[in-house]
Length: 253
Image 1 (cartoon, rainbow, N blue to C red):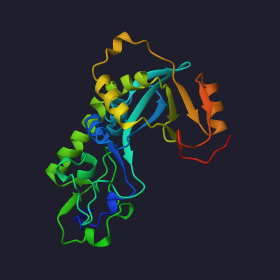
Image 2: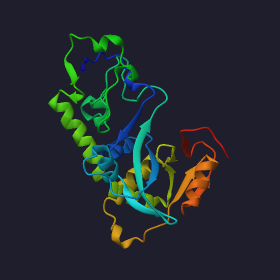
Image 3: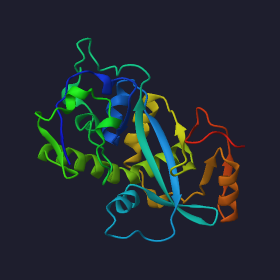
Image 4: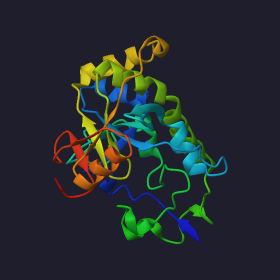
């Protein structure tokens, strides 16, 4: 299938947004006084992924190894900024006030940033007129048609992988060794912007080999998940969904 696209500058993608940021991008936003959260998840790591599985390889490379009780796990940390209303960069004429400095994730919308994820126009915020067949080709046969877009997305994925060691240092600097179970929820940290910017800069210079490896704990709002993790040798803490835990399911405590 061929997908055509042309931005209508409706501004819908700049309202009620959540942006995944690289460390460099998060430092810029934090130093501007804007909130950036740290979302933490982890999944048990039993076997090495199939080297031909692009998505599994990406998930491995963007995470770092840790232990939870007797379970080997992979921890993934994501820097994200979110606004319930308009982005602070959105101008009255619906143009971006920092267009040249906007994050990569903004530059590639409406394309998905995850490997192998297929673009589904109906799931995006753009109006119907943005998808007219007389507009430039965005994807064809599931592949991105524009070389610049391919390059930006590749840079975004590469940054998420290269940032993993520094984010591991951030967890140690903040003393946070708690994670949601992947595909179920996230532990959410909301440091003050100035503190986060300082911590991110410091994390890049930390000597990880000099810091002992901590024990991690899974956080969940589902009793059955906690019991399964404990039965497998892991450590799990039951908490209600809320400010510090972003849950994908209703509480079952």
